[in-house]
Amino acid sequence: MRNPLNPLAGRLDGLPDLQASWQSWCLTFRRPARTSRGVMDHRPLWFLRVSQADDATLFGLGEVPPLAGLSVESPEQIPPQLDLFCQRLASHGPREALDALSLSSVRFGAEMALLDLLGGGERTLFPSAFTRGEQAITINGLIWMGSVATMLVAVEEKLGQGFRCIKLKIGAEDFDQECAMIQAIRQRFSKEEVEIRLDANGAFAPDEAEEKLARLAPFGIHSIEQPLPPGHYPAMAHLCAASPIAIALDEELIGVDDQPRRLALLAQIKPHYLILKPALIGGFSGAGGWMDLANRHGIGWWITSALESNVGLNALAQWSATLQNPRPQGLGTGGLFVDNFPSPLVQQGETLAVVPDRYWDLSALFAEGG
Image 1 (cartoon, one colour):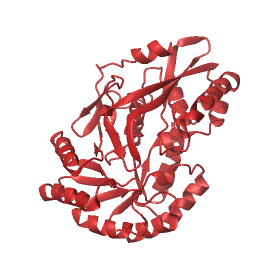
Image 2 (image 1 turned 90 degrees about the horizontal axis):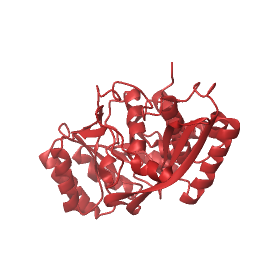
Image 3 (image 1 turned 45 degrees about the horizontal axis):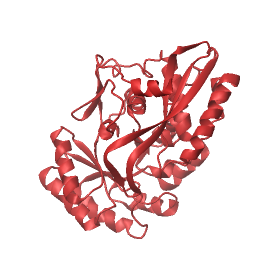
């Protein structure tokens, strides 16, 4: 039986000789994406293709999506590591090639490409009722930072689309105005009608976070992601113990790569939830390691996109479906780009689904990549 927390385990032995190549890419946001860390207009990516050495017609495609301001690695580090993977894959095979990788985003892309190849090169990495179009996964509606008036309009749009769980990024505007915005939502919709998740992206200072969470608590908030900047372990531990709102760790997980360090972090901080972005925390296997620890210690979790293209989002959605986590996943990012790749993924109300009679259009990528 395959291990959903480490989907390549036991599947790399006996493969034929493989080869790989890569190319860079860039997507454009429909509107500037604003967080407390800054504004993004474009999304740089790399794509990795893995095929049999004697037959390149059938190949697996992986996405390498480091995220500026969050990933440990810099964009300049990506091409040399991709070259290393391609060389090791040809000379030593997939297991040794993966073991040579130190960058999370490259491991994510390499694991994705190998899983795609094992699945027949059809972008079906995790066959399930989801990939057959028989089931959908529930997602949250993402509201980007902006003026309070702009965010309220966006909330109305998401609720009109059928979302019952919305995620608001806060921390960039005046806090009083942000509270007023959340209060306005609650005056219209109870917590039974609409679940509100908040994401502070580490915007609160340690000496003000407890007061701010106390002010937010009356609005029936489900959880808040990363209220403090990462690295403030004692302060975050105190906040998790004292907060009237459940706290989820996000940026705190990045760069904590081995299980003993991860276990020590969870034992000290004792968070309520983990936000798992495989591209930033060691690929599918790295995220699966966090899930394993969370499951053992009664900590909730859900998977969130790191603003991948539809190629990466497709892999994350398929994986999420096999994990059968009932919480809304953070995978509603496919419509953020004007030039995303058309795919079978479709947002239907508050769900993400596969429409089997829709097809991938990767012609632009393949035309440039050969």
